[in-house]
Structures are given as C-alpha cells and as structure tokens.
Length: 114
Length: 110
Image (cartoon, rainbow over all chains, first blue to last red):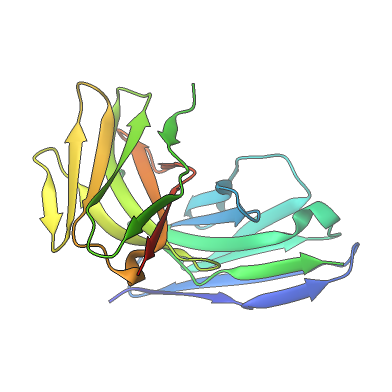
C-alpha cells in the first residue's frame, strides 16, 4: 500500500532563517505531488504541484520554492522566512498519469515563525 | 462566485441525529467529487468519493446533483467522534488540481 511521510512534525524558526521541509511517498511510481499551506482557521492554499521529476508548477507568488529531486521526493524550501510563512504545511500525492484522482495527505508540519 | 462553496457552520447536533451538508460548485465541467474529513490540527483524510449514482458507506451517504451543481453528505446516527470539519473537493475534467471548499464544521454533543 502507499504511504506518505512528511517531516518534521513541528518547527519553530526565527524570521530570516532558511527552511527545508521534506516529503516522500512509498508504494507508487510517478505520483503527482503537492504542497499546501493552511493558515489557522482557513482553507487549503495550493503552493506547488509536480507531475514529474524536475517539473514544478507554482500557484502563488511567494518566497518559497519547491524541488523534486527524485520521483517520490518533494521538498519545500525558503532562503529567508517571513512571519507570514507561519502555518500548517501539508504534502499530498495522487496517482500519476491519471486525472481526477483523490489526494492523500501527509501528517503535516506545523511551522511557527518567531 | 467561489468555485466551491460550503456553509462553514458550525452544525451543532446531538448524538444520534441525522445531519446533512451541501456543497455547490460553479464549474459545470467538474467531473470528480470527494468528501474529506479534517480533525482539528490534523491533515485532511479522504472520507469518500461521490459517484453519479450516489454511494453509501455505513452511516455516510454521498450524492451528486449535476443539474443543480451540488454534492451532499448525509451522516446518520451521529457519533461524538464525527465531530470534525468536512471538506468538499471538486476536480475539473482532465485536471490534476482539485478545488477544496473551506469546509463545514460539525460538532456532535452528548
């Protein structure tokens, strides 16, 4: 069966520090991968998605970036965090090469910026 | 008009009650529909897909009305553990990017 791992679970970072969140999927090949952010009490905001290695689409302008160095690995990064980057970050996957499939989420990373 | 709209609630119901949520979508090209459940400070989890003919999973029934462009979720015999936010998700045909509703909050009390 497929599993998705996301870490760390919680992170407290000072303003201006770098960020690296990692997500890996097991049990499937060439998945579609996604990064979302959810502010407290708000809906899900899609940040990036990828349909293949090295293919990254950004949905919103921001100081974050994403990379997909391997088929089942998705990384969210920032060179300098802002206070507004605080939130609940979720990685998700769906079956690759097939549209209209449900997404499956990792446990999330709760990021607090001080 | 938002692409996917849900009543945020909260819906406050006693144990054993039947409760229903609706979710409207604006894109008539939408082809796939899902309900997710999100507990407080947790990730969304797929509850069920919504098929054209409607589908049932235990106490949960999902239905699709294409003519009026809405999907519904019915929960029978509510349990305390059903308390959560229920997210409606709509996917346009051929798209890898689903659209999430903001969610409907359900609180089941003793």
